[in-house]
Image (cartoon, rainbow, N blue to C red; front, top):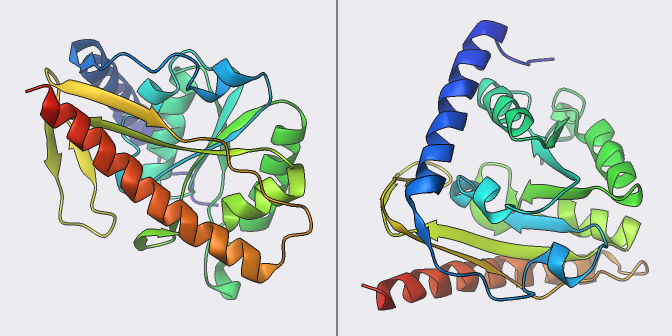
Length: 227
């Protein structure tokens, strides 16, 4: 399994954790809508989803949540994310989805799915990225399958800042900068029927893509109004 070089991961994890904390402390976040955050609605564990390229402020979005596990890949960058998550007091589950049957074992896709399922059943919420692996802003069915298997709701969120750098890479990543204005928006809960078939789950994944795009666009518009 590729969990990265320990010393390099530790150094990068400390640096990224410190930077994210600095960004969060120096960003003026728009007040959250009362009762909008999943853990304010009920004590039911949930699945939180955002785009891979927009996940940098996920810890800020989860501020106040408890018993959360975050999925991190087996690559070096996933190991750095796992280090940051651990320093922030959250649980880490290692693995990632894949569209290739030959890579399922190498990416620890099936054990990670079972671990996430048991976490949800045991009262722990999950944070995942929605994208199909290496396909930006097209939602896959992994979270939908988890929601169907556990009966837990999916909540979509957008966490954006006015001070950021947009990268031209595969996931269209947004790098948050300090001293800006921020906005976090959560969707309504989305439940998946246990009897949902492949067609229904595919339609739900399409709806997730559309809703995530709209959430991010709305968050950006709200920031623009505050200039």
